[in-house]
Length: 411
Length: 161
Image (cartoon, rainbow over all chains, first blue to last red; front, side, top):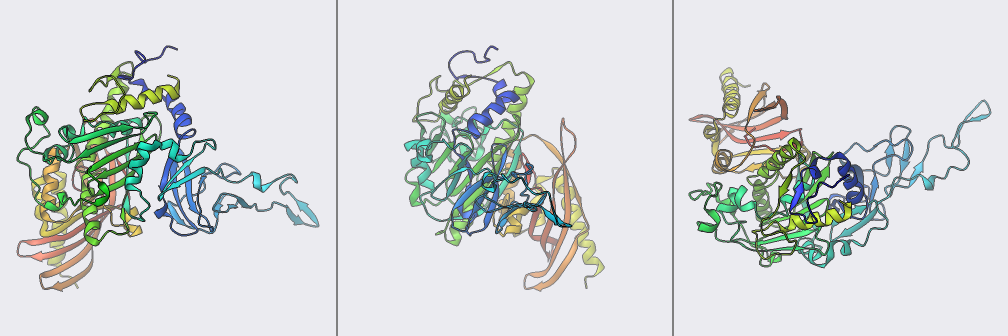
C-alpha cells in the first residue's frame, strides 16, 4: 500500500491520519499500551489506604489504588477469570477489589485473594468441582501496570520495559513539569468531562499550536493573555513528542500587526466583573504567566495564570475522545486564592470562555477530514522545520509531533 | 404554609426563565438575578463529592452579563436550539430575611439540543437548586445552582441552562 504522506516531511498531514481505524488501533498499541507513560491521576485523589479511583489508559479501564502499605498501584479493570470490567464505581474505599460475577477477589495491588469453591463443594461425602490441582492464584492476578509517581502525579504503563519516567520526559519538559508539580501537596477542586467528536491527536495539536489562541480566542487576544506579540518560547524533548508553550502576558490592546483582520479582537470589550481577570502573580511561575505542556500521548498540563489543571485524553475510536479536566490548587492556598482559581476556571473547560471554542473547532476539523480523507492539511506557518522557537508564529510543535509519530508508526 | 399567590409567582418565574433561555433572548437572562445573585452549573460528580469546581461559576449579575457577551460576541460555536422541560418546583423552605422573604426551591430539568443539521438530542439533565428572593420587582434568584447528572458534556455548553 502506498503511503498517503506526500514527502518525508510533516508539513502536509494526510486527513486519513485522523480517520483511519486501522491506524487508530496501531496508535493505541504503539503509544498508549507500549513504550510510553500515560497519565492516570493525582495522588491527592487517593490519600488513604483502601482508596481507589477508576481511570483510563488509551481505551482500557484501569484502577488507581492505594494499598495498605501506602503504595500507589495501577491495575487493569478486567477480572482475570472471565474478563469482566468489574469495577463500576468511579471512586471509593475498599479492603479488596471484588468481581461480583463469581466473587473473585483481589487485594489492592491486584493479587488474587479468593476464588469461591476453589477446592470444590462437598456433598454426600464427595467433593464436587473445584479448580484443577495445578491452579496457581499467584498467576491469575489483575494485570499490574508499571507505576511512576512524581511529585504527586501518577503515571502508568502496560509496558514493563518502558524507560524511567524522567528519561521519558527528558530534562527540558521535566523542568516545566516540576515547575507546577514541585512536591507541594495538591488540593483537588473538581472535575469537568466532555466528549469531543474528533481524533484524539487534534487535542495534542491544539496545545502545540500557539498560532490559534490569539486568533480564535477573544479573551486571549483582547486582554493580552496569549497572543502573537507576547514574549514566548516553544520547547520540545529530544524526540519532539512532548512540548511546552511558554508565554508571558503582554499589555493587550491595539497593535496593528497582531489585530488587523482579526475578527475576534474586541477593542471596546471590558469585563463587568473584574474578578474574571484578577490575576495575581505566584512566585513559582517565574517570568512566564502561562505554560501549556503536552505529554505525549495522554496528558496536557495547564497553567494559565492562576488556573491550573491536568487534562486527560481518553480516546474512544478514531473519531472521538473523552477529555477529563482535573482542576486543583495547592495546600497552602488561602480562601482568596482558592476562589480566584475557581473564578478563572470560567475561562476553561467545556463551557469556558476560551476552551469551549477548542472543542468546537476540533469537531469541525474531524468533519472536514471525514468528507474527503485523500486530502492533506497544510501545516507550514513558520516554515517546514521542527525546531524549537522563540515566538508564536509557527506550527513547529505540530510538525515535530508528527516527525515522532511517523518514525514510531513506520508511516 | 405557602399561599397560592406565591406558588403562582414561582411557577411564573420558572416558566419565564425557560422561555427566555430557549428563545435566545440572552440580554434578558441576567434580569432574573439579584445584583449579587449567582449562577452556577455544576457536574453532579463534584456536587456529591463536596468539590467546589463548577462548569460555570458566575458570581454576580455583572459576571452573568459577561457570559452574555461571551455567548453573543466571543465564543465561536455551532449554533443550536435548546428546549428546556422543567418539572414542577418543590418548595423546601420560606424564610424571612432582613432583605426580604427567601424561598428555597428545586426542580428537575431536561434540556434538549438541536443543531441546524442534526437530530434532537438530550443535552443536559439535572436539577435546579434555587434560592429566590421576593423583591419590589418580583421574584429574583439569589442563587441558581444547576446540578447536572450528565457529567460527560457532549463537547460544549455555550448557552445558559
